[in-house]
Length: 141
Length: 326
Image (cartoon, rainbow over all chains, first blue to last red; front, side, top):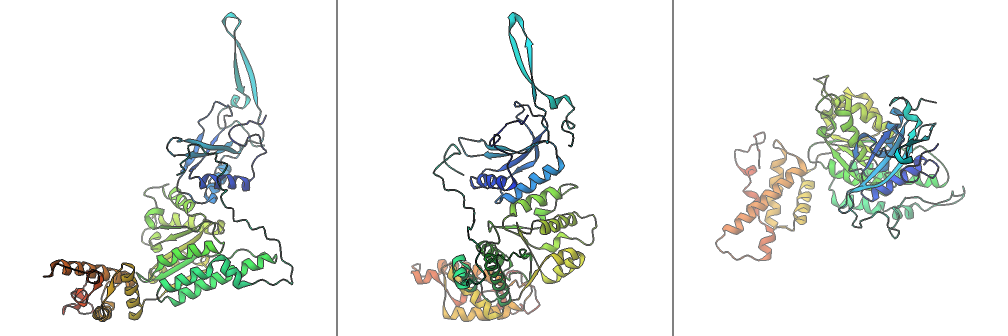
């Protein structure tokens, strides 16, 4: 099951040229970018691990692509996303965030029902990927 | 920083993508190189280079050649001839104050106009910005600088400091290795310009043959002649809205004649310092004169005594003697 998270996630995966254009848009707006990765696909897992430091003072998308490619080769089978931060007063939050790599095979989620008192039911989504230990969740195809 | 609180602004113009939707020309078509030059604004840059920078004939020739090559390449592209882009990594060697940084800045602008660089900014760094303080610090630091320079020119001043021959544990060589890799792999993304004094750069290249071979353009900046220095001084005073009186011009000439032979002479930089000091003396002269009333001419004119008070004219300032602040 393809997870959908962040911007453009209902579109086919972005090519490098398309990523470059999005990065150029971010840089034109003065949003510094950061590369993040994770192997826990749960939608509530919002704090991904950061690849290096956020990239300030960049003028051109090639520098960002260089880091994305470095992260891709070091973490070939994880989710990688780019996050653009808008530091302007009144916003100061993530302005744009989109996935630039996903594992070859995404096993998806299972719905767990938990019976509580008074016939109430609590629901949990359980990612099959997390059944394996972290770092070993998406074996290379 | 954008003022609007939210990111989506439909009326915002798209960031320009420099995409030229030109179709391929047939083989018998004729293109006008002069028109293409005008369009790209090359003439303007070269002209500014000519008027604002005095002397430096070999440098200007080389820049004009590079500009011509890139223009011709662009025209060839329109006929569908695809040649790999030329490498434009450069090395500027020359004595202090010969205009290496200034030319690098112009080069960034020129290459941007010619469509070789996407942004055309200049990131000027020295050893401190590239080399880290402890193990593992150098690579991220160098990469960070490289990322900032992408799309523009990376100008490494005093590049020979990167390699310290006497210390083989120095982190400088790690930085050089990363630079070499990037100069090869990201040829299209940035231009690396190394600058330094000729003799020290020679030792640097002798120790790093890989660097030598990856740099296509070695440009030597000649020392200025006294005539050129005088012209520079006049341009500088003009820029500061001062005027040299005729006697001051003559004094300046004599000043430069003497200063050139003295130690720590740094070409245009020494001239700038001399002009600054003449300004100081002029201000003091005006404040201390008997008649406290001054007019515009007095405020903007540098007179001969302002220059003649310099230590360069003292008897003990023989050629070879130490002149720290002339």
